Length: 108
Figure 1 (cartoon, one colour):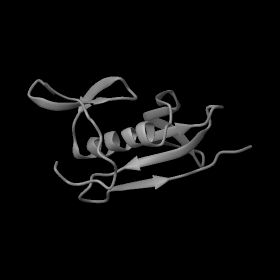
Figure 2 (figure 1 turned 180 degrees about the horizontal axis):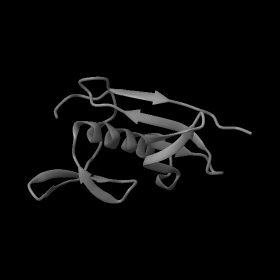
Figure 3 (figure 1 turned 120 degrees about the horizontal axis):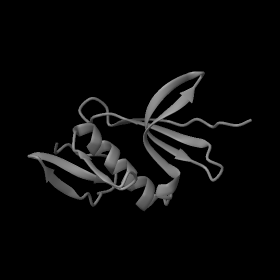
Figure 4 (figure 1 turned 135 degrees about the horizontal axis):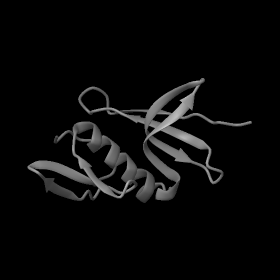
């Protein structure tokens, strides 16, 4: 899991849980298994919060969202102050694709 990401360095907190490496998710406030996809997700969460200034309270992780009448599970959703999704992010492991970012505006 030493692939480089095109993101600023993140100060991730790790822990060994039952001989499995876990990482602290700053938005879910819990340790989750550290997989290659989770690495991308955690780096991007740190980028959103610590570099772009989005409040953690306006970010959801691994949540369902309705797109074109169908439910999809998004890796990261950023909401505006009215609770409307403004950014939907799908993270992929680095050796396939660093990440795919889809931005959708939801208006009336």
